[in-house]
Length: 152
Image (cartoon, rainbow, N blue to C red):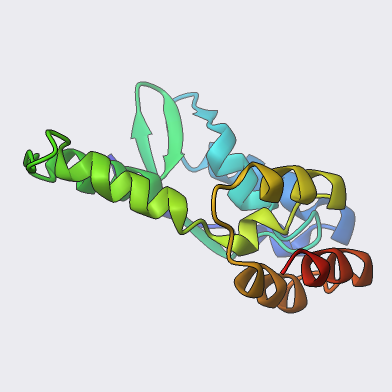
């Protein structure tokens, strides 16, 4: 069952209680007792305790609430037809490898500097310019930018 729930009622709560209130409002909007998935919880808390989303679309499955976006992603992956190419790999495997090679660098540089350095050294052929752009667009840390510039 898919449902869009307005969480605007949470804005009435004090600033330090808004995300907690949003979770309560979400639970109260269902007749039965429901659990909130970690993915949905992260999306509610993604902007911090003071600024939860004003509404969220959820999918209820077996008493557990999931964000509807995660279901759309899963159904698209499952509905892809599997084709085998001349190397014997399926098209999905080839696409997954290509997407793994072209990582979303903004997610990589969103970690701590030590974690970013470890992730970059583990990459086969990282695009240092793209990493540098993602860092400048994100946290813009001087230490990490210098390290990436020296790696070119």
